[in-house]
Image (tube, rainbow, N blue to C red; front, side):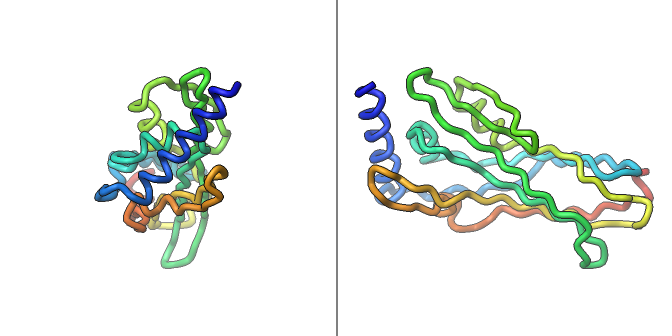
Length: 183
């Protein structure tokens, strides 16, 4: 028990010091690999967020502090918001078991992963179905963005905005979808 507590304290101090004192250059995440399928009842959408969890993220994810990435998807028609959906993928490292517990997507599906590469892949993958009557519109604009939270390091009594690791820039993408061509 004492080893687990000391391990978490050490990992939190390590992660915090990396955030404040490292010479990292920051990540420049970007969306890619878009897949859009249109039905009468809405749009199935998936994509990947690349280069988001490089550099100092491994130490952060191994610190035992719950970390998440939130995706916001907005669908507009002629600058009017039709639908908005926020999806959060969350990870926490379980030091004793040496794996991450992930809560993914809208249904908070639980997944256990041992590999850091698998962790990054699962946190970076987004898929959802957005319900709306597509027959009412000729085309829509789908906007997507991602953000990281402010995390509290209890042992240091400090809050850190993880967006610093993304150079304080939200990755964004915009897709124009012609609904008449895709139905």
